[in-house]
View 1 (cartoon, rainbow, N blue to C red):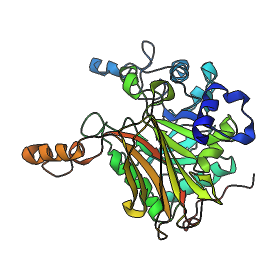
View 2: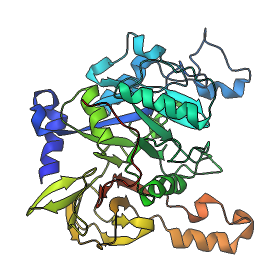
View 3: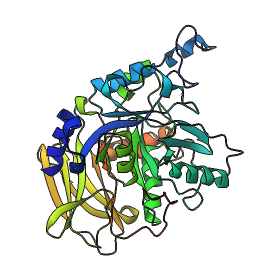
View 4: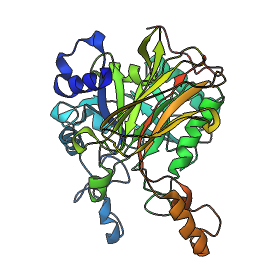
Length: 390
């Protein structure tokens, strides 16, 4: 299959691949180092006031890049809180991993400043100030992302601040509230899908939000991994691929065997359309899955419309579907059998587990394996902020 071949080329011969061919590059768009206020750097750093918080010992820039390289990642974004010291650290780009300049901006909600090489000093966190900041970011080719938009809540509407990307997958999907995460992962995906329902074209991404050595085995760089289809293996190429919506997300990085999922569209008799493309309404779709036999793959349209739900029956699996002419987009979910019905029965049998009907472990999916960005069947009716002509 075309995408599988390109993936193998990207992993083994990434630097030698012709720029015009394009290639899938694996990486993490949300990783912290000890430059972040909530990641301790050990003796000599600002020590936790409570010894029980020594679990916050984190990674240096070199260590994060080394972990990324060992897990087969091609790129890594260090996104410390309102801090870009990592960008001048000697370990920046260690191991041949492509560094993506970025930082996490504490706004009314958290914004990911993808590509940014400066920290913005805003007069306030009003939507007008954030929108003006995004316009300036676009002048440089940088992207604004809504991070984990349910915790803290991203309090800007798309019409106020039309973000370029939404982090629909933050931390491993099975991390749910009340422990070990305060976030609602199904809610994050609903947030991104709501933008699509309103006519926006936004890219879906994932990020591990890795902070500490204590959690790196299960929440380190690449857990989850965002795959970007890029024309060239450079920061510029990766940002352009993200901006174009050419992304899919896998639960694990390449070296840890994360399943892969892709969505294609049939145009003029060939499967040439991919994530981020706009095709005519009703265009036939094909989903490709690698490494997930026994899982369920679902093509989802407007307001959760079911375009296709089927079982993956082989290590290299494809299925086709023709969407309704009324749909304006479609994307893919890939998930394992996470016993949703059984969990709901337990919660109903023991009422105090779910007194308010909001306990995520009683209702949410916990075995998500992959998500794709959308293919669109119409141009955006809510266009984002402009980028200068390249």
